Image (tube, rainbow, N blue to C red; front, side, top):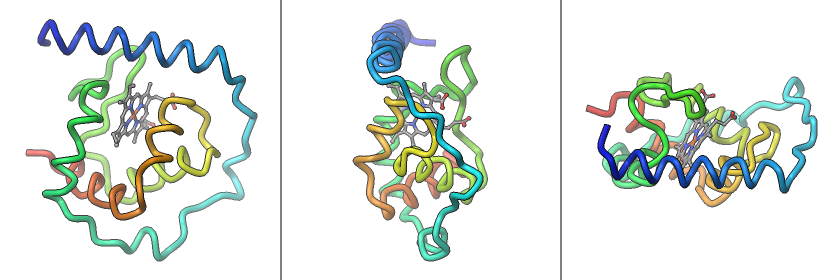
Length: 119
Ligand code: HEC
C-alpha cells in the first residue's frame, strides 16, 4: 500500500471514530426496510461510477482492513441496498451516512455498476 493512502486512511479512521463518539447512532430496525424497486432498476453509468469512485477508494482498498470493508465485486443489488440503507439512516455509521446522503440514486447506481467489476 502507498504511504500517502495509508496516511489518509489514518485520518479518515480518526474521523470515523470522532463521528461515532459524537453521534450515538439509534438502534435502527432494518427488518421492515427495503430499497424501492424503481431504485434497484436504475441502470448505472459505469464510466460516471469510475469517476465518482475516487472518493470511495481513499478509504476502501481492494482488500478488507480491520476497520474498512472491501466493496469491489459486490453484486449490484447488494451495493445499492447498502448505500441506500446508509442514506436512509437504517444502517448506522455516521461517515457512510454522510457520504451516501450526498449521493443521488443515479450516482449510487453508477457506483454500483463500476464497483461490480472495477477493472
Ligand atoms: C472516510 C472513509 C470512507 C469513505 C470516504 C467511504 N467509506 Fe464506505 N465505509 C467506511 C467504513 C468505516 C465502513 C464500515 C461502516 C460500517 O461498519 O457500517 C464503510 C462501509 C461501506 C459499505 C458497506 C460495506 C459492508 O461490508 O457492509 C459500502 C457499500 C460502502 N462503504 C461504500 C462506499 C462508497 C460507494 C463510497 C464512495 C462514495 C464510500 N463508501 C466512501 C468508510 C468510508
